Length: 377
Ligand code: OSB
Ligand code: MG
Image (cartoon, rainbow, N blue to C red; front, side, top):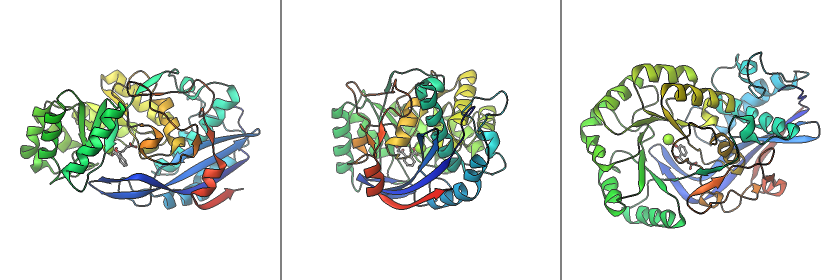
């Protein structure tokens, strides 16, 4: 962050009511809890998001664990530096070296790196996507649909999003909500870009039963097995024609290298929050590109702040499938940014050609959804 002198960091813990409950194999969310991070320098404000949620179910982090780690460890590391500087030979927005002593806590780190990248983008008058090596453009997007109380309500959801123009649907699966549902979805929508995400709910032994998924022409099967299980994912990938995509498993470039060496996947879901920020997300993107592995942009029910960061990142060239970066109204009735993220004709969202987020953060909305606020110095 050459030439950036951080003056202050503020944290906003928010509770955002979802328009529709979102259920995965690990649990059901009605209200999403998230942590917004604001960094200030030179009269500018940068915003990032730590979408760690209330419970340590998707990952070990929570909004409160991130609150503590940012307040006591990561925040002071940035504020104590007279001038933020990237390490030699790294991008200016790369804070990974500065955070290296703190293990894990990727979402906490990511939110600060996002906020500083937003600042840098504004200070230089350069769009975020250009800062990252992408360019302003339209990004194809899909929608991720949770497990529903019954098949009828799931198909009401699918119908609604297909008719809004989303060109790809991801269905959450778990044992007891899988083959018959997917078979019916494929029969009803023979041409639809369709994929599934198990959030690690299966075991190696389930492979024989789930082999039939190979018949449905799915784009990919996301994270069938638990995060640490790279070896069994390789066994599944060898047995299936459908590409395996890893999400939770890929927490760093180092794990990615192991997954590539083992043949654990053919596609990677990139979430900058899970990876520790844009610098690490770009490193994963670049390594995948060199290895001939396609990536796409995942999501964690972010508010418009994290969503705008994800859209900027998804302009990089190796993002090759529609992202889980749907329009704001698919998640929330009221956004924290203005304008909200809109769905364009044909199932696209637009990466901004303006510096920063390309939208204003609404102080009123931050206040309305606030659980707690803290100023670090
Ligand atoms: O596994 O991709 C996931 C939401 C919360 C936690 C994990 C996941 C998801 C989604 C929805 O699939 C992504 C989104 O639309 O934001
Ligand atoms: Mg996933």
